[in-house]
Length: 216
Image (cartoon, rainbow, N blue to C red):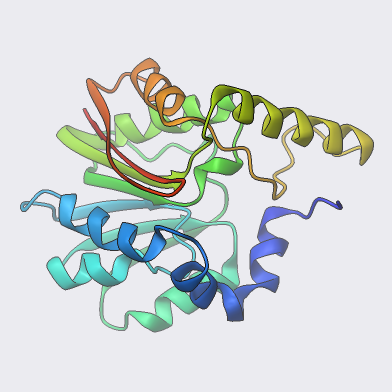
């Protein structure tokens, strides 16, 4: 298996991405709706990590048509598709990695991520969670809907295979490539708490798609 750089991987799959996520990935169609429903009524500003083509924003904008969204994604082509989907919406779109990025302090009422963080190392996740927590206003909420490992053994197997492939292909540490490294929901919650979130719990699951809610 040849690992691809993350932005190239998703840009190449742009035209089939929405159909794939809606029809082929168990739990996604329902997960988008559940995520939107869990946002607090007073949400006015939202940070969207790995926003892609904005599938998660469809039901969110139905609830909050005047919402101001800051989205970040590695693929410029996906961001262009998102922009075209939502003409007239209050969008600030950033092309780049959310790893190591400073999103400011107390800027957002809520933050979301959908099927994106399962590509990160444990260390990168804790770093991202810390930045998200800092970016949330007091009482803010972070919602993560993602692919979860069924057991700790399965999680370890994914990470070990990723490391093996990166070594074999001489991929420098820090270069972002596409390979699934999901964690268990329990480990995800532990990392959120390590990053400083006051609460974190699994609120919904279908298949291996899990929705976690964390509060500042």
